Length: 588
Ligand code: F6R
Image (cartoon, rainbow, N blue to C red; front, side, top):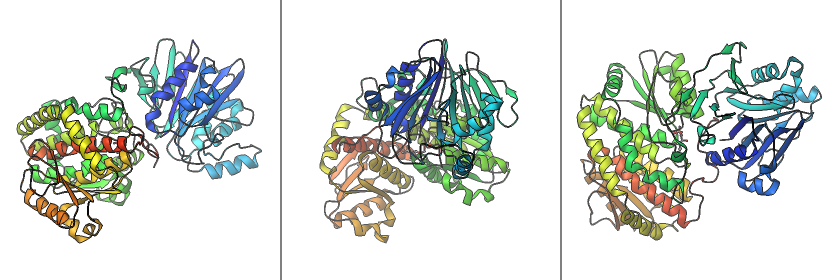
């Protein structure tokens, strides 16, 4: 979703704002813009395209000033156009605003503002914000921002500047904003990576809070106007973790980092994992929730808990959570899984659960994210910054943790740890150049196919669905994942000679069944691609994976991630930033 930055400095902010916008490109972007206060004027430049293109067209880098705001837009309300790009201003051009979120009541607000004589220049919901601030300006800029924010419905974060104020003011509810404390320079951004080059010292803006960003930032509650004290926190990531290094793409770098990240994810304190296991064992109902890929990890968790711990857990994708929330109470446990910790549907699910007194545990990658801070307990995935839109290393870290929790819940923490440490070592060995080459040769064989199907049984069924997400988003090939046993109940009709079908095999009691399904595909002329610890006569192509027991979902996913990457390269897609998608989905 949109990336926003505000900087107040003793030096010129133009270059740092441009860099910050470049660092946040991975969140998804269709237009960019910046505003600075310079010699008593607000100067704005903006345009359609990624920030580099906009810079080439309108020279963002030539904007000079000590106070500035910038924005990468991922369009929600209003088409992608120069007029709709942020920043937006009031009627006088004295206030400029960048925004992330959706103002749910913007039509109502806009009609009223037009009746009050305000003139609008865009189709966006955002533009109501500077006009609302203008409306209250006689109370001073800070109070006007507070009043304006109180009129907005929905999950919103914005940063505003005013021509006569040597500060930027930011406010949030729902969408993330983090203050970075630099040397002689203060930052506010939707994402830590925007300023990680300059500082790791941060202060979190919580929901219903605003901050006046100046040499010493002042935080206030929006509803009461009272000042709020904040702690400075030093975060564990460093700038290099968020760079591509020698890799051509973030996606490949992050796939390769799984050599270490699985190990890091399970390297948690035993007491912490045992405490969570006790909570799960004592809760009469445990629910898992997440979106997209993380939702598939939740689904895999359902199988893993059933098999390893003999325990039933319920799973619902977060956007569907409101249909089931009435089933939760103060005895229940909700486990939320998320890479970013900022996914709007997940945050809303946990807010709803908390209102019912339900305890919330999260498995989350981004330390200090909204999910991390709102949960009663959170376990950090420790995967480091994940910048490719398609989740890879965070996913396997989540799978590893869910597997570990299932073992701990079964009273077998040691056994689970030992299995997963072995698997982490095997993944380390697997991710070598020969393996990459093997997957590339498979990609060359199938990259022109319009469809790819994936089947699995048990915990590998949700992994088949996750495989489909990965292939679709990275290569734009239509892909679907099915439970092996469901094939003959419909999907077999889609298998024509040469249709690639990936069969995820684990060396367990389900192996026989999935190989029968592979035969069904073969009998219809499908191209059977086995991802399996052992080769089998039914496979036309075989990609070897380690025999990982209950951790087979982790190892089966890794060649799929590599395949999606190779397919994307062959089809010349933007593998790090697939079209229409965003890394951090902060709107519902
Ligand atoms: C796909 C992908 C998405 C995310 C989903 C939830 O590769 O990454 O499906 O899993 O948007 O995001 P998080 O995990 O940040 O809550």
